Length: 248
Image (cartoon, rainbow, N blue to C red; front, top):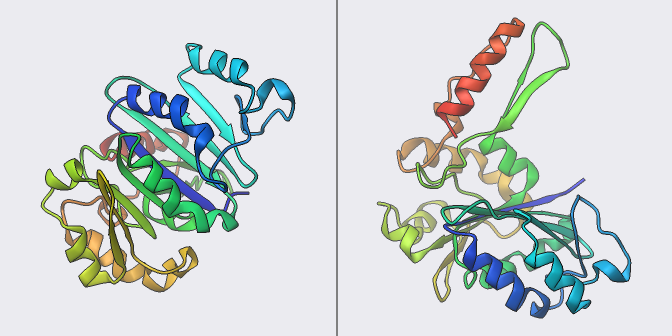
């Protein structure tokens, strides 16, 4: 089970795909994948090794809209939807924490627009809606909400990445956020990283302060604004779907 989650949004699939081809095999040790392939686990044979240049190029040149890459402690899942939107999700063990800022530094050159990293429980607390079905105890309706980085800023987390263009279109400033909540801002070539607390596990100590801040600003998605439906009958599952559609 993963301990660290990383979400990154792009405005196209072209730039990240070019970055994968030109840079992925040259990344620093720790974030350089060893295998590529489909599914959640690597196929550990020579046909799927990153240093198999011919097989790697064949994989990239296919019409796949989803590309997977595996390191010792993580799985990178690139979802290359269209020229308008793409997404990267990284599922990692807790010890990958030391490499998160290094990865964002690299993704800054890959066309990243918005990104977040933190303990899985932190990201789930802010963007994962899970409702028990009262007519079937221990069964749930669940899904991610508030992820549309065009509609609102999806939230604030342990590590946050915003491109300069993204910051420029919103009436919020990473420096003012850090001055209020604590943390540190690091400028990159195309954007900024701002870390709100030293360790990912420290999120629980700051949870209330961060959630209060999100609720106070219309620029951000806040789970506190979501009307949580009661799922009392099978028909009520439509209320869950409608809630997810309202808060994409």
